[in-house]
Length: 146
Image (tube, rainbow, N blue to C red; front, side, top):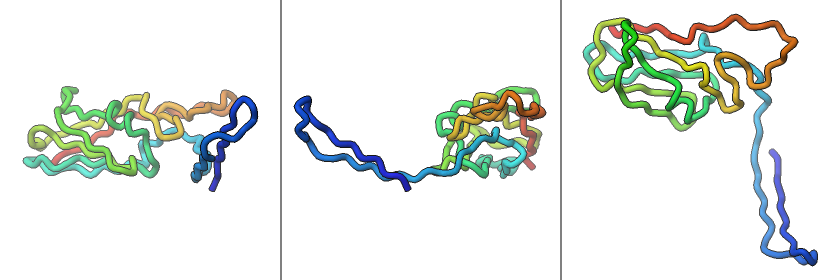
């Protein structure tokens, strides 16, 4: 645990106000791109409006989850629906506006999606230019409503 302490003084050096203490915990550094192969998809049943649920092993940026994930049908048309981001930002739900059809769909991931450390599916935040390049990931995850 880390502690941050701030004291306020006037220009004359007299203490003003009260001290502010902020305690916080940090996690180990994260220098790995988002690996879509580690994601788990739980698909709603055909004929239902049950949510498509994406579970990630690490927290993703809340705003990115709202902006940079979408669901398309097999023809590439965007499926309308409501996005719900769970409190821990490791779980994302998509509730379709209309019932799932017995068909193939794609979860489309924009390369700008970030985790809380700024890593994307394309690269780690602080890319080591001397490290070997990683193979690109397919940013479309195929799933089928049955």
